[in-house]
Amino acid sequence: MKLMLTTERIPIKLWLDDIEPDALIQARNLANLPFAFRHIPLMPDCHQGYGMPIGAILATKEVVVPNAVGVDIGCGMCAMRTSVRDLGTSDLKKVLSAARKTIPLGNKSHQEAQDEACMPKGHETLNIVGRQYTKALKQIGTLGGGNHFIEIQKGSDGYVWLMVHSGSRNLGYQVATWYNDIAVALNKRYYSVVSAEIDLAFLPLDTQEAQDYIKEMNYAIAFAFANRKLMMKRMFEALQSVTGASKHGKIINKPHNFAAWEDHFGKRVLVHRKGATRAFEDELGMIPGSQGSNSYIVRGLGNPESFKSCSHGAGRRMGRKQAQRELDLEAEIAMLDQKGVVHAIRHRSDLDEAPSSYKDIDVVMENQKDLVDIVVELAPMAVLKG
Ligand code: 5GP
Ligand code: MN
Ligand code: MN
Image 1: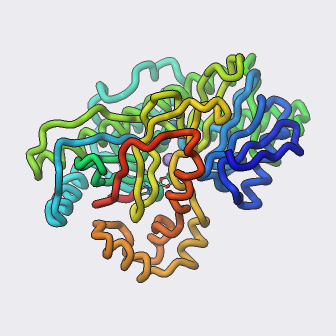
Image 2: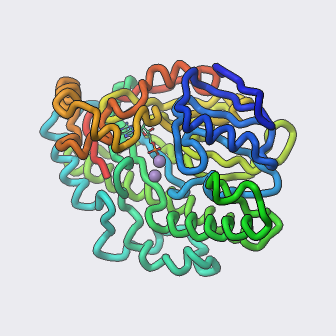
Image 3: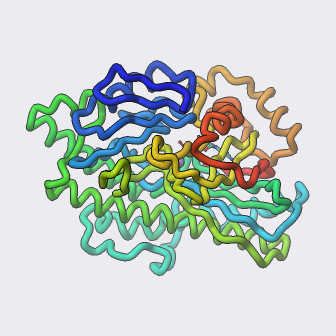
């Protein structure tokens, strides 16, 4: 930990030295919530989000806060080591075009419904999920827009790795916005000071609405997990079709937008992680940098101070619009070309995902040495963006 602020109702603990003023305002809002438990950890990738900063953790005992999970419920990363040791540029391009045939990118869905066996069970009893289920059958195995990516990486262990970043697509979005709207209305009805103004409306756990939200959230988390798993399978098939690779390691598949019951500081609490992942002792995880920098496979140290969490990436250094306005297109392309990355930067509008729009991953890793150990360093080889 680098810094602790103690002027709020509960402390804010920061794993970074400098924080955007707007993210700090949001962290203060969290720390002043009457139901926030113990302290608010801010991960080294922390930056402004909607209501709650990305890279922040909120533990509660009596309420759930939909915006502290975020709109892309269950969004997360999946990583897998393959048996391939090297891939030339022309093979990399072949793998990408094979993948494009089976994995819709951007906001596209499949033309056909996918096999129901890919979907999590239990949609029948859920209100929003139930209504969205038919559409979701065409959304499973699709990447989604903007920040989501599939990357082929070269590991420091000598193997080629695959990484997938995606969430629960429109299904999770529908659940998130539906229950946040209910929370806003409920908070206003009881004159809660929290509510709409700071975008952190809550649902008391003893209400039916909260129980319904948690069930639907858990389905969306399972859907996002299955979505990444299916894309990982199809990515591996694309790699197989070009290289003949037949073996791979165990899949690591973890959410970074979720809430779950866990034991911390001797209490059973609902831990909301928004842009943060679990780093329990000996648990493997991944911390991506950008399409132009290293990413990492990490092993958690189970540090109780972060509620056993770590960052979910490098985090944004600047907003999307700012990146498109201010970054130098030629310089970003030259840097990626020089590294030999088969990248996704063509136009000024792609600059929102350029390496320089993200924080320095080396600094981010240095700032969380007490949260994770590095297991494998991954260098980008080729990337597909949403
Ligand atoms: P999110 O969009 O879920 O908040 O953040 C995802 C994280 O992934 C970002 O903080 C960033 O560090 C990382 N990231 C974004 N784009 C790429 C990419 O193309 N490749 C890799 N390896 N990491 C990325
Ligand atoms: Mn997402
Ligand atoms: Mn994400």
